[in-house]
Length: 387
Image 1: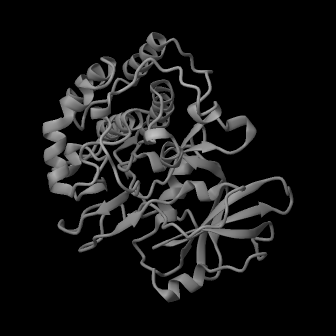
Image 2 (image 1 turned 90 degrees about the vertical axis):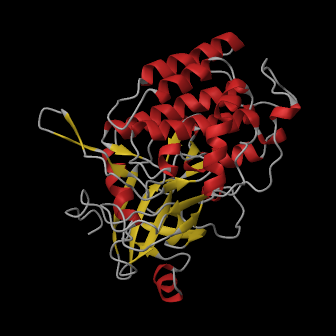
């Protein structure tokens, strides 16, 4: 985002948006806009997050257009943020939505050895799976499933609820007829790379069209990282990460409870046309909890004292591979020509948005870029979500 674009979305603290929302402070910055914490002047106890995007920056780089569209589709999901307002001002588009607490990335980073207990990891995986299934059920795949794109609720009633967010890389994989029957979009022979190298599926590496199962591959990698503390390919470039995933996948899963082997086996049976068996995967996760002697209502790791540990599953030191920074990047490939979701000749690497900055209690920190980039998509061309 250039200086001129930044100027368009650099709003004064205390200013009012649409005669209702007052800007309290800036809590995030990225290549495509700024994020603010706002308060509802008609209901002062209601805090919200406001994402902004400059008007006229690039006609086909409309992150908020995709974000609003997907969130509207997800309005019945308990794992999706609610839209309070969306539209445009003189210089910028805006989206005012649920203010969340810390991301799973930030929560794990604060844990000993940067890993959760098995019970917490499994319970988080179950909720993430529910959120992903909700997204699939409204016709979209995420294509950037990773810990920084899931966050815990902030309000007292949802502090134990996981929210799925950042739909900038989402793609509509199907349409529905009047009877609700699903019609899959024809997969492209070659698709541009979409996702984050550490968590993306082998299909993404190979430029195959991503489907519902690819989101679940990312969830599996993400869950393995939550349990073990890292992944063997975490600091590798795209080519080496792909090779490592091929050669280390079985070994990685072998270090986890046996139910994850069944999880992996199911994913390997799926292709673009197949609907995953979400119930099977949930039942596997429930089996792990039962064997561990835990239930869903048990506290998460961050809800108990640091000294407490009730997990019977403890990976050995050799399974806990050393890691450096916890930064993650979503990659847009420029090697492919124009496709339904991509502008010609563009490669964009966008750092994760630090969801912890969305906490009302958080200290003002260096701004983090907005995660995810949406490109022009034929499923969105007729939409006027932000007008």
